View 1 (tube, rainbow, N blue to C red):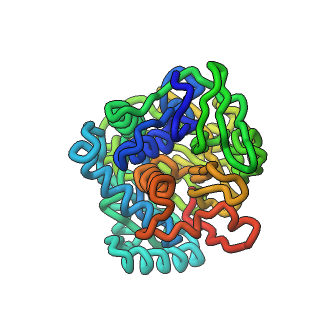
View 2 (view 1 turned 90 degrees about the vertical axis):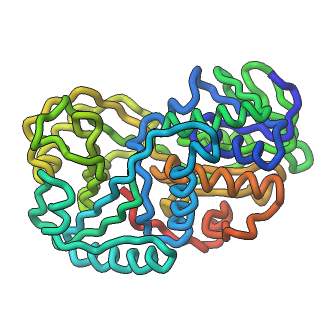
Length: 385
């Protein structure tokens, strides 16, 4: 392991590897990425549903989506590695007048930024996803360029491209301390020794706050457990014909085809912050009646696989991208509130620009600033599931 680096990145998920790739693309290759696990992308990155969408409520997040999805569409051409990416669309189901009005406003904003999004009737929504029940649904929105991508493929593509350019990646390497001298980062301490550096990137996912504490910072990111279940193969007509992601916004229940089965999940508003990633089977018992109401085929389906992962959530469900104002050399790419994978291509590029060029003239990072929580300059993301 190198003992000196221009940049040390803490975390080997999609956000850390994207930052490494984009730093290398800008010519900064004296970079060390450290990951405490044996493999990259085994934390939140490897435990998500793989969804990518343009349909957010804030302009800042929509702009992240526009850039990120554009890169995913040409990932092999630009990064050099093939990924599994299916753009069958996202379908949001709306069951209240408040939600319908909010999503109408969202669609106007999305269209104003050049994203093609449709507002649909319940009947039109049902035609897009055979087997779907639209009982109680009063409207829907759909974007055809949204879809499902492979988190592992994207993460490893970024990592391999960064390594080929000279970035060093060290697995089984846990950060134990961050040295600070005269208000500046001076080194990162690990279980394999110390790395002298003037720049640290906190890309530690749900553990971002723990890393912040090592540097004397309180980063407002808390972990929340989310479950994913995959059914055994279903026979037609129960098996969806496409990989369209369907989200019942009122309940947050979602599903899409995964192989010959169905991947589905839902948030649990009653569960407190936790690092527990064991599967709570009692939650499945509460989920199935809600799930089978929207997709009746799930009522009689058997579960083949299940796991739980962690959302890294900020108070306004909007990420932190940028530098710590009170600590020179400390950068954050944290708190994506369940959307880190899909926004990793753009977020990594923006942070790399900030580190190398000290600015991002093509993108206003103020909505993602760390200091917004103390100044009150926040724009909460409302389209969170």
